[in-house]
Length: 230
Image (cartoon, rainbow, N blue to C red; front, side, top):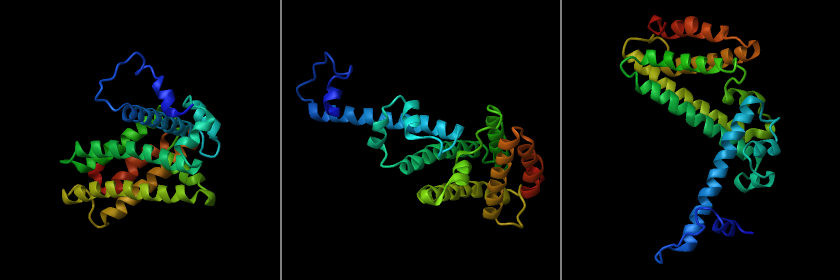
């Protein structure tokens, strides 16, 4: 049975009398698109959680679709390959990174260095919910990416560059406000911060305790940006 025929049986259309001006084909086609998009979104969200709790390599297509309540064969209706799925979950994860970081920084434009500290403090709090077992999806995927998944590695590189760019803007604002040291370029400081945070996350994941994250917040952040970040 075609997708359009399935959609005709959808509860939304059962017993409905459509207005003569309604193009049934377009209406059914639009509904089919929305259902397909919704299922793709669910596969991405559930699959992201599965990969984040485990690993990309250990999360097979069957497990990913099962987590989303979808038939295994439907996976390739939405993704041409598992690599394409990997890129999709990176985008989904980074959308949240961008939104969270952007929101915190926009709320602290008068004290940009406070916004930076608040952002990393929030990440520490979120990690505590599962005893730091998950780490950062982008860092995790970067560590396990093989040459066979070069497309994922390149996509991770682009997202890391964007993440660094957002932090660079905040560090530069802190420098202009006289809150942060000016002897090191903002882009260099931002890159060091992100690299150090990823390392601290990895240690927290191994040790299941936040000592490295606390050292980042209490020692490294003030040392790199200045005492205003303490």
